Amino acid sequence: MLPANLFRVSIYDRAPLAGLALTTDTFVLTAVGNDYGYEHVFSRQIAGLGQAGDVFVGISTSGRSPNIVAAFQTAHHKGLRTIGFTGAKGGVMADHCELVLNAPSDRTPIIQQLHITAAHIICGLVESTLFPKG
Image (cartoon, rainbow, N blue to C red; front, side, top):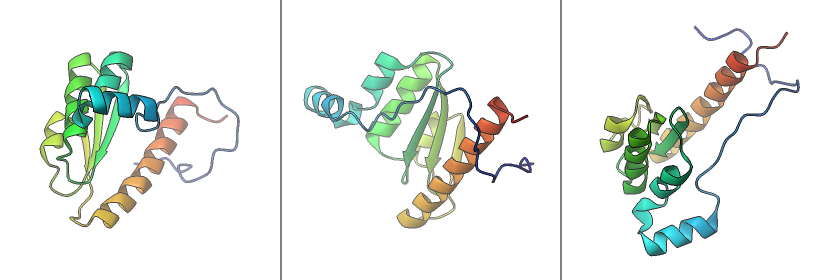
């Protein structure tokens, strides 16, 4: 059951949460891609930064992206919690996730629309659970 206040925008100050997008550091992406191969651009970052108990969220519409699959394997090996967003078939990625959101479509634009909506809902749930207002 979703909380009644889930869809209200949080307009109060709260403590920050740590988060890191593994897609934004072009220096790391190009260095790892050049030195180790593009299939390792995320797993190398998880190997260096991830700690047991952290949460890794990976997104692949097909569930077959080698760099995402390798990231899930590394995350699992290091003891991170794993959540995957993928399309209807799930691909091999789903085998490496603790929780999987399979968007019920084979069409990339539809899958991506469902992923972004689900991500916002999940963020709202996390926020309302960790930082209840009042």
